[in-house]
Image 1: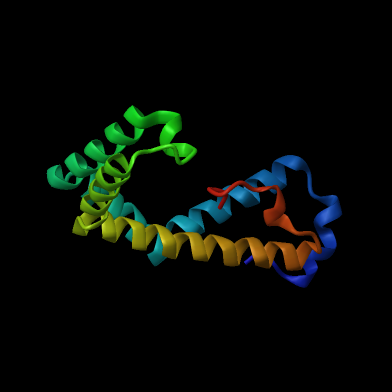
Image 2: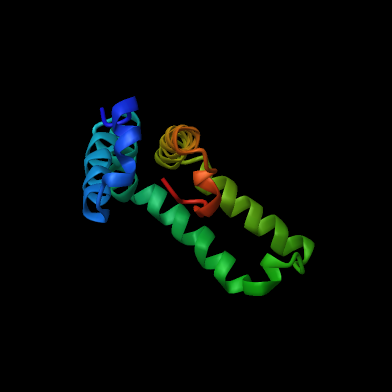
Length: 134
């Protein structure tokens, strides 16, 4: 792996292209992890599950229809209950649950990677990343 002491000492001599190549190699390794493979499979299963897709569509349509009212909490009790019901119907779908669990496992792995990079370079790497950063 590239994260050897010798590599760390040579970092100042790497070109931008070499750093990008190392990132591409890392991405290839990440894509081979069980966490990533499980996420890809869960995503595929979710896309091909009509019941899950319908539950997601129903929840998202209702959420969009309520727009800013939902974002800022200006919903009637009936609207809140309907949105909760649709959300629960969506997350109760086994394919959705599997996807969410796989996504969380991949997120944890990516967080560990970001923490490791931060330790190696002495800089909080994850600070500059958004919630989907891996």
